[in-house]
Amino acid sequence: MFDKVILSEKVAESIKKLIRDKKLQSGDKLPNEIELTKTLNVSRSTIREAIKTLVSKNILEVKRGKGTFVSNMPGLVKDPLGVSLMNKEDLLYFLFETRLIIEPEIAALSAERICKNHIIELEKSFQKMKEKIIMGEDHTEWDKKFHNIIAVSTGNPIMQRIIPIIKDSITEGYIETKEIPESGNIVIKNHEKLLLAIKKKQKNAAREHMKDVILYGMNNIKSKKFD
Image 1 (tube, rainbow, N blue to C red):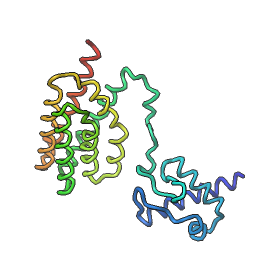
Image 2: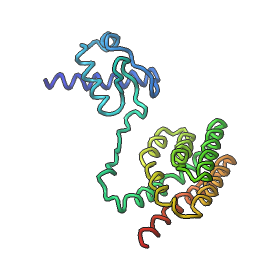
Image 3: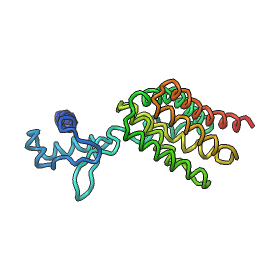
Image 4: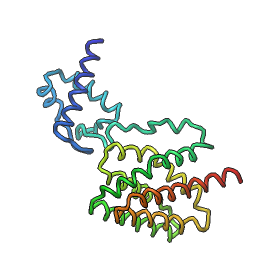
């Protein structure tokens, strides 16, 4: 039994190597079990055990009747930091504090590396976010997209994974600040300044404007906490 476990783990590593070698992306389909048994020279039961291991790590996703696919965010399990078990009273502030440490440098890197297509996507997400705010609707999905595009535009795959982990702070930040009358206008202005700095490839300005975006949310949380 022990040898079988070790073998399935080795096969799991071989499947990960296959994903890398074939440069499979999120949503791409893996070869079927029969093809994998021939390629890796192991039994179908070992392939299944290896796939189970990779599914548990959110590297693969099995769709009944369709096959096995690379996960949407390979290797990124839900709630990897265990925030769902933390004290909710301070969690929001700590999430924003984490963003303040990480995101200004991501914004600076984005300003240095962003391409034309990502600028177009960033402008679109900003306009959608602005429209939602003006109409008094929940803008958080476009807010998240805006920040995710900035992370993606760095070209650094680690950055792209860090932001989704802490993006729930954006959702909670909206809940905390939506009742503040001037909140929407300030959010629009801060994000617009950030957008322009990144478009103009102004690293220092992008860094500072990202700080402004996050600090505004942090200060609202702090003031509400001590009211």
